[in-house]
Image (tube, rainbow, N blue to C red; front, side):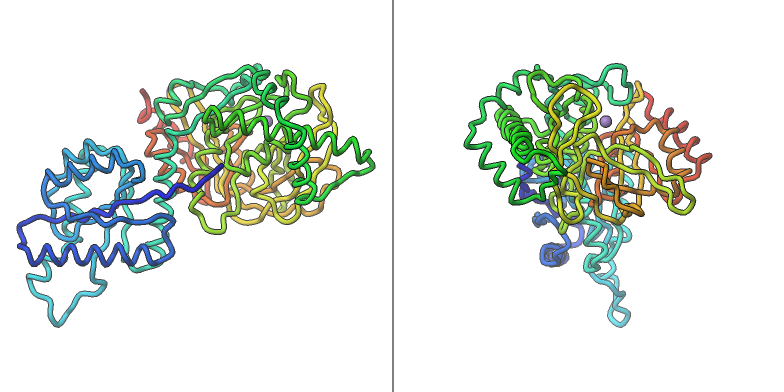
Length: 499
Ligand code: MN
């Protein structure tokens, strides 16, 4: 389902015709060498395509409009080798609708002390040209990414690679379609929001379907297809019977297999990439989708529980952003559940009733069945596991009435001190930065939800850049967060982002 699309990024070098043919030949040659090196580096998740040097208004405008209509182009990387008068870029930039990276680099690493003359200076003046070029973005109030550094350095290349993932998230956001087979949970505020504004800002289509329409798709799944999938589950996962009847257990697992197949067919036929459910609105479903939703998330679908379409869309966007990440550790829907408040061991136990994505699992995954404390359905089968350790981010997109705010928290994932054998759900455990006290105070002051879109494979910077491209507010809770400053920042933002 989450098929990696082979996006490309165009490398556009700026210059002008003032310096003569020989200089322009060098500019083209140098930029081709840079493009080849970037593509060979192994640090970029997507291919870079060299484009002829941008020397006039006409070439710039035409190239950018070609980029707009090229479905494979996810963004433009620009670099001024020489001086390129920035008025030449105004019309093209005003028409550009793809993410743009301004790479501030230089072909030569070292000043050639013994041979440098004015010809060399005029040919290699990125320090000069990139300032002129950068100015026009600031003048136009245009969002762009600026990365400074030497093009051969791995850390610079990795920064470009991380930006590429963000750019793909920007491009793909407008292809996210969320299926709601349940409304938001009654009386809950934080999962609500303005769906029209979400489509304007993020491009998301959020549609409702009566739950029993998808139930028909589940009921239409053949027994043979269900049996095949149950076999796959039994070969792939451990089975934790825990005294339950083996036959009955398998029947319950088969219900989830039917839901997985039926849901996926229904979503695919109608071109949806994210789904919300609600334990209180299950229609003819025999169980709350648990294992089934976990498997769909693993395949790349976004998910939000209790009708939370904003988080479902964010999970989908973040899964798309990580599709180019090597050795990805996982991205999931998540919920803040309960705290450990023991000094020195503080953290939040993260889980959900059932629906945690197996991509974040550490080690073996098992199937377990247990009654839900809510609803009146069969005991649902679910995948249980604990999650990987290491740095990650938790994000929450909230609708403040006059604007969306994306809250981004750096968190450190850990193992719980002891196993929790009676807990029938997959879990993660993390300490928010800068610490549990300040992290949770800031989160609550920002209006962050209990549901999050969580990933080990994205940085706060990437999510903040994504938000900037969407034109929405982002606030960061990280090692530098200080409550007084944080409150001021949100107050200032309320003026800046006012409609
Ligand atoms: Mn929930």
